[in-house]
Image 1 (tube, rainbow, N blue to C red):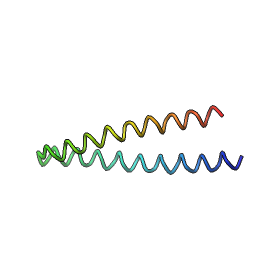
Image 2: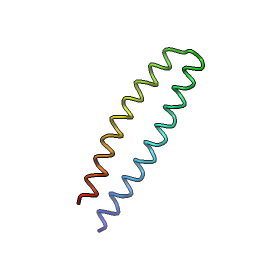
Image 3: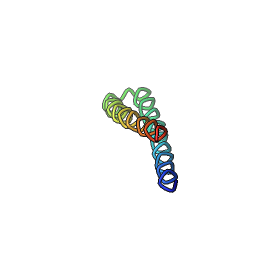
Length: 68
C-alpha cells in the first residue's frame, strides 16, 4: 500500500508539472503569433511536440498504475 501511495504522489506531481508546461507552451504560441515571431513560434511548437510525448507517457503510467 505504501508503494501505491508513493506512486500516486509522483503521478500527481508529474501531472502538475505537465499542466504548467502546457499552460506555458500555449502562452508562448499565442505570444509568438501576436508578435509575428517565427523563431519563437517554432520553438514553442517544438516544445509542444515534446510535451505531447511526455503526456502520452504519463497517461500510460496512470493507466498502468490503475491496472495493478
